[in-house]
Image (cartoon, rainbow, N blue to C red; front, top):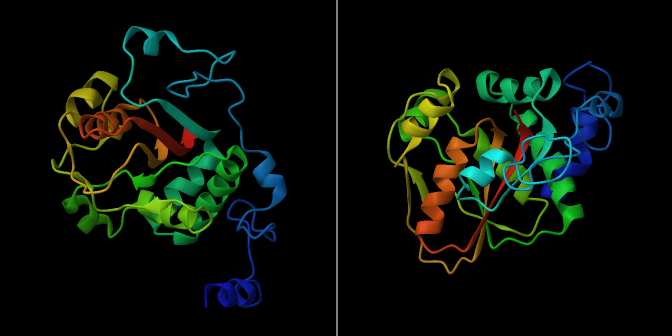
Length: 228
């Protein structure tokens, strides 16, 4: 059924670029010209993924090593990439999740990384009721459909209703998110990937990675569409 839907979708609802309104290309609601304007992260901290002049571990990670093993992001968070994320989160444009997920799937398929499980960063149940969905889970579904990775949207829970991270500075974010997650799973997991839409200071994914490591998971990577 899904293959049939994928074949007829371009005829019923033609792909249209979110950014310029021209025809979408390569099975995306994005044209190649607009996609070429996205700023890739060519050099970065090999642990937290922040853009650098060369590939190395940044001073912050050397001083205070994070709990995750690596952050892997496709693009810098700028006007164009931010537009897709904001459209999804605040205007419920679920086709943006599919576009983001497909771009991520194509990227990670080339890298040939094989984690045991894919875990979207959860929202607190109160925030899910307010927004109506978790944007990271929507992106994860689109990505998982293209990759042979088990998707787990229930074992990692956000048990505290924290303040919105966007309104806080780095120190406040770390304090705000401390102890916010709980992980319970009967599965045997050695390598997990945490998936998020954007990594800013890394406080949220670091606390989630800490929770997974405390549960016995040996390697935790973070995959995100954009890095601020």
